[in-house]
Length: 209
Image (cartoon, rainbow, N blue to C red; front, side):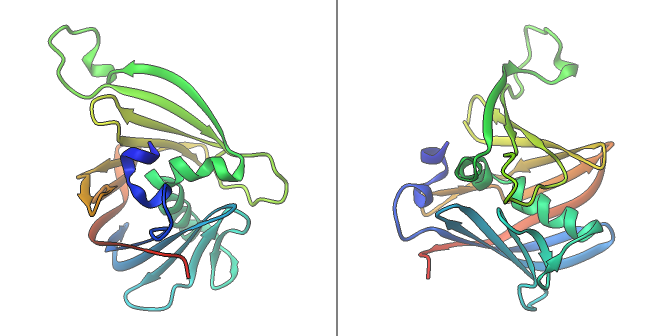
């Protein structure tokens, strides 16, 4: 997966990813600037909305925070979705001690059944379990299921738990920019209702400062 996603995990000089796009949370819409920085012990994420300072943060050790204080409610959910439902976290979760387990291979949608004429996506499913390290702040969900498209090798969707309900993040519109792969749209649904959406407008990579 690291090689398929790009050079940012393999060589120095591209450890910081900057994503600018439109974030929709319920009826609210904002311009979001998201910075993902690889660290020796994992990853840190900062988010600024509508040109403001990056007061929304997430890291392996400190978890989700708003202006330096622990995030709660919708802010906590927003930060964990953006931080964890991502291809970068699929790669970097291992650095903080997360476990990887192959759950199933060549999985079809339920509605496809055993039809011989099915031509849609087929997935390999990998479960990433959060580490039990007491020095790390645990997210709301203890695990995530990543659905890897067997044809493209990229992530199509991520399943997780929020307050006892299943949340589905659909990743689509994958693009290759300068040798780096990224989805241009992520849509989160709960009970088939859209609860959040991020549409990517601009993507950049650079070195750690």
